[in-house]
Length: 209
Image (tube, rainbow, N blue to C red; front, side, top):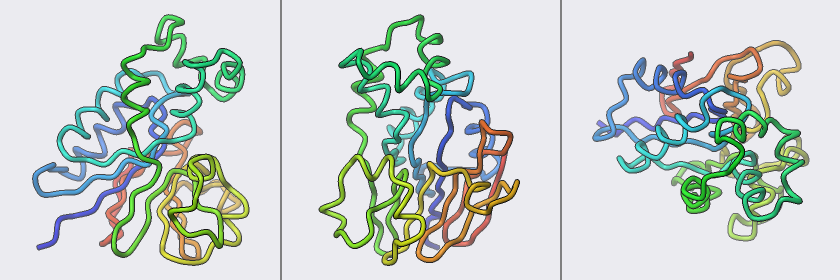
């Protein structure tokens, strides 16, 4: 039997929810393949714990991608001019947790993460892709930040993405994966009153916490 392919995105410091959905799915790193689509820090109460969980998962074979919040933290570490953007987007919770100093260790860890992952039948990315551009010409900025024109115009190989809460995609208070044309949104708003969702992309089964 083929290994399960499990995806989750936008943990945002909710380490216990991440551990819970993995436990609910009976995730086994020796038989399952796990993909985390970015945004491990900010807004939730345990960014440090989340980074530790993600690091351990990666050591055991998971693929973790970079998100825009992770990138804002990296950019703030290198240049204080970037700090305001990060703080205004929820970074204050993470910075407080760090005691006001961004740890170099976690910057180095996040810097090593790729901005997309490609499977034979799909692409995984934090935010989306620019329509009409080959994958190897996509910018990292778009892959972690884009909404439009990706959401309305992208057509091509199936894309799994986070970044945009699914309630915005549905236009109503609906916290479940969103299935659009050639794209599937899985940010189900864990820090916005929604849930964290782990999705088996082959069976469609979901686990939420």
